[in-house]
Image (spheres, one colour):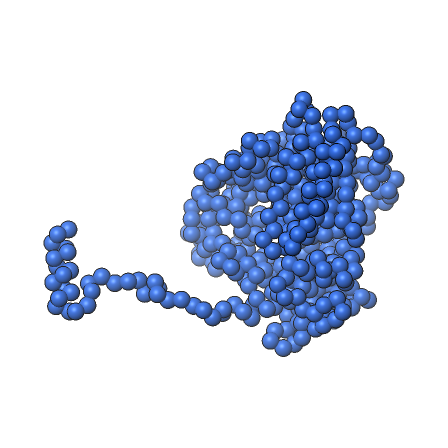
Length: 486
């Protein structure tokens, strides 16, 4: 070591320059946003999707859409009174933006799907070529069918072990904490199979569909679990994905070691495309908001870590699992009808639309539109150990998988399983440790609490920093239960 220092000093004296170097990138800083064009068309595409679904999927007014749905955007195009946008009510479509710094982006409602966003070079004349699902609804009338298969709910007194005033106080806190960042649209509490509390914000009712955001991931996991239960997919088999770019024989591609379990645990080890402030410039934003193929991009991704060793929340890991589902289902018709035939129609989720990209691929990482009652039915399926009307739809093994922490989270709090969120280690003294939850942007939660025979659905249109605390809500609801039932 002393000899090395001496040689370095001699070199410094001889050359008047240091013998060590600072990495060339250390002092490089880019201030120009090279993604600004993409960000602008994504911004327009977000507004197109929000406005189209707000008007034609949720049946909300233009004023409501601008006041709440678009509050998520920093700078919406126009106002409810008008601006650089077009609403075509005959076509059930919208176009956002003038043809200036970026092209307008359009979205159109399609039967059985919801709104599909179009590519920048498409116009309203291309709407008929967008995917749709032509499946008739179930023949019976949900208004005449008792809950939970239908919407007929008979009023009844609260069970004696629940304090009505405390339950109402929990509800009030959910709605009264409305601020510049949190807006609760609905709260539904189911105990012992019965709806014991149901409340909606003004302008919302039990039929109002809103976007699930990433709560859709839990629905995707359930559909995939059905195929695992049937032996058509395997958690520990490699994903059968034709990766891009091609690197020759599959054995030479490290991505061929990624399994379905890795993808559902958000631990694929692939480069996280949606991170580094690029979620609304590239990555999944391209298919969510501006008409790119969701499948083509999911096939990309550099292997930067050993699969299963690092947790990184990534929309494309979900979409890779959904792609595996598509491949095993085979033909397009079977694939398109699978969510309804396998799950939604069987448990009465009649108000749920699973959206697609313009190529007909489900974007089950985020783009599902549904209402609070349908999400309560979904929670009840899990609460009832996967059995509905005496028929097992998902196995106990699958429920155990989705509730088991991803191995990569052992030292980080064990807060995520198989596309469901778990009570973090540091919150287990506040709420039952067996609780688990779906979670979606802007405050979409379905909480399942087996130890208390409880499902709680909270829907929101939060924005800004967000941060609605679902575990605090659970604690507030459980405060209404007497000590013996807690």
